[in-house]
Image (cartoon, rainbow, N blue to C red; front, side, top):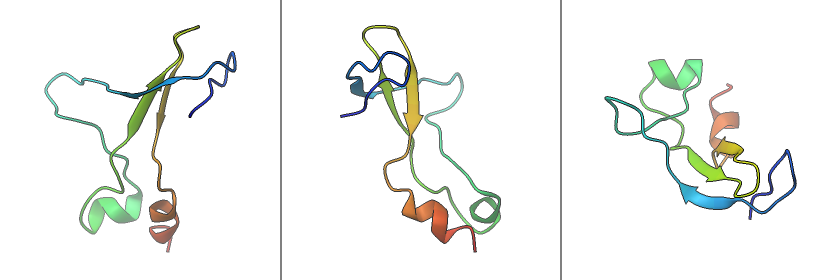
Length: 68
């Protein structure tokens, strides 16, 4: 369960962000962009108390692999 960084309320997970003209959002590093593919799909959570939106990836180990 993610906790809101602003008001410490439990956030609603498995939400989505719709970008106009696109089907989703991916996180890229300079290395992964040139060598084939994104790191991982982002996930979103929304705070039902203050409306804060959190965009995150669950597996940060893939970021560390692409730093090399």
